[in-house]
Length: 517
Image (cartoon, rainbow, N blue to C red; front, top):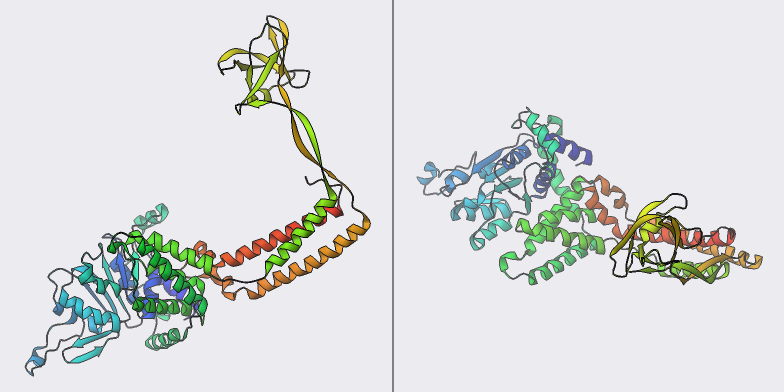
């Protein structure tokens, strides 16, 4: 399947629906992988409509839809018992127009099914076969979609059935305000066929695509991610106090997940599963919606930290750039230690003040008030005693003498001196290096530049080609897909930082008059 065809098909299936593209894509992928989908969500969010839409993706497809109740019987799902065959001592059902003869199946309120229905469904879900009396029927079911507004409560009885649904998806009410407004104003008939005939999948195409999906390969890097996710899930399970809180994934389920990833690679016209496809596992690993956040975290960590790893042997380059920078810095930047008189700050916000006379009583003034003082414009500021109590509020100006404030007390000028102390600081003085030293640095810098360019080319050559396609993924969001580039992005960042450090040092000896301190 061409990527553009899949996109156009999704566009048509999504027509008149809002915030449902992801689940539509997942159901179509599941069909391509021969897997089943379970949707959980409140009534009225379009679960049944999503299942009906999938039918329109195929030419001349047949479907079966049923709302389960506690009183549902196998006859209502698999067909009535054939009276004619009973006369011949054969117990067979008339399956035409029922589940065994359908291509797209939707079972609503699945957990209300009785044990007889459940047992028959297990083989249909797992092997796509139905045992009709003594005959075993190979069904043509492409996807079974089940839905409920609750999860199975009896894990011992319903657990095996729940495990057969590879993809789990929580369907929620529309979140976007603007899309909800569009829904209110939309008059389109959502129950009709929205897929043009030329986009529908023919029987021959479907058969061919299934064969192509099975040819998609999974390399060691993908297998490694699966191993890491398994280990992280095992560690998560050990931290849980109750068994129902654990996330247990069977070997059969892992194998089915790989087939879903193959289908995803196929629709993106790839012969091999890509790292970005692994994010689809997020829809296959949780048992309860509360576990989704933990599953996403585990997947993101595994893919980000253990994804594409490129060994460019940068430590040698890093040491060389550092040595170059240190050498240039030592010869061009002299550090002169100096002392500077500075107003003392106490308690993080006060200056100490001393009056030149006896008419003004105060011991502290706030640093921020002193900063705002001007020489020719008086401002009213507060003065405090030793215990930080307000003792004066008076007009003040910046004093003529350094570190002083002038106030007027009863018409007479009073000078307040800020208490100061000596603070040491380092002043950078640049010196022009000798010509021989400059020539030596130029030669050294050129060698580093050549080495740096080699590493940049090596990164470009070694980076997997699929990294250029992650933003065009049909199912995974752009921000999530970018995690695949994490290791490559870190190398790009480090090379850029090393280049900046090299160029900064070269600038120091080429333009020594420019102070960078």
